[in-house]
View 1: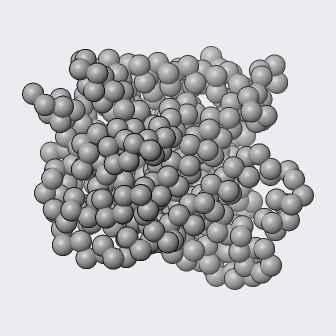
View 2: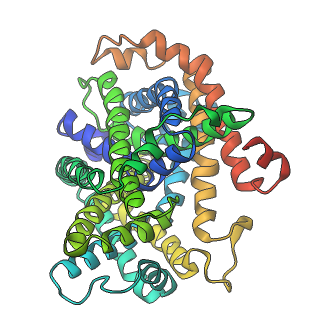
Length: 474
C-alpha cells in the first residue's frame, strides 16, 4: 500500500467542494464580513473585496489545491518538493492552524451553549437563556470556566471525531450534509430578518455605496479590512487547502473548484450579512464586530422576538455551529495531515487516529488557556506578546504572522522561483483557460497584495496604538 492509499482521499469532486467551502465558511463570515462591510463603505467595500478575490483569492486558491494534488502531501512537504529553499512557507502554513484552533474551539463551544440554551427556551425546559439579559448571560459564560470548559471539550471532541473517521468517511460525509443544510438555514434566517420592521437600516448599512471612505488615507483602511477578511475567510495559507487538494482525484477540474469555493464563500458571507445586520438595526441596537455581535447583540434580537424568538435563535445558532465546526475540521485537518505525512516520510505508521489524538491534545491545552483567561478578563493570568488576552495572542501568531507570511511565500514560489510548476497538473483535469491570468497575477499582482496584507496584519497587532498607524488608518 503506497502513501496515497494510506492517507485516504475524497470519493467525489462534490465532496471536496463541500469540504473546502466548509473550511472557508466560518465565524469570520458571520461576525466579520457584515460589520466590516458596513463600517468600510458598504457596497464600496464589497467591490474591493471582490476585486481582491479575483486577483488574489482565485490564484492562491487554485495554486494551493493544485500544489497539494501534484505533490500528494501536506503543506510542509509540498513546499519542500516544489522548492526546498521555501520549505519555511509550508511550516508557516502548518503552524497557523495549530494556533487558530486553540481559540476557535472555545468560540465553537460558546455557539453550542447558545444553540442548546435557545432550544431549552423553545421547549420550555428551564435550561435556556430565559429572562437573563444577553450581556449578563454571555458575561457569566466567559467568566465561569467550569461552565464554558465542558462546551469547549464537546466541540473539540466532535471536531476530532470527524477527522479521526478519515477523509471519505468523516470529513466528506459530514460536509456533504452540513454545507447544504447551512445554506438552507442561512436563506431561512435571511428572509426572516430582512422582513423585520426596521430591517432596511441594516441593509443600507451593509450595501449602500459610500465612496467617502476612500478620501485621504481612507482607501488604505478599506483595502486593509477587505484583504484581511478575504485571506482568513478563504482559509488560505492554513494548510487546509493543500491537504484537501492532496486528497483530490487526478481527473477533478481544479480550475472549476477554485472558482466555486470563493463564490460560495462570498454568497454565504452576504447571506450572513442579511441575517445579522437587518436584525440588529430592527431592534435599534448599534452594530459592532467580534463576539459581542454574535453572542450579545443577536441574542438580544431573539429575546425581543416574542414567542418565536427561541425558535429563530436555535436555527441561527445551529447554522453558526455548522459553520464553526466545518471550519474547525478544516483547520485541524491541516495539522493532522502534516503529522501523518511526517510519520510516513520516516517510514513509520501514520495512524490517523493517533495523529488526531495528538492534535486534539495540543488544541485542548491552548483551549484551556483561552477559557481560563476568560477572553482577557482574568487579570491574574500572564498575557503573552503584550496582547490583552490569550485569544489575541494565538490570533497574532496564526492570523497575524504565520498565515500572511505563508501566503507571501506561496506567491514567490508560484510567481517567481517555480513559475508554471503547476500548469500541467491543472491542465490534467481542465483546459485551464485562466492560465495566463493566474500566472500574471501570481507574478506581478498577488505578491504586492500579499506584502500589503503582511504589513497590515503585523502592524495591526504591534503598532495599532502608534500615531503613524492611526493616521494611516484614518
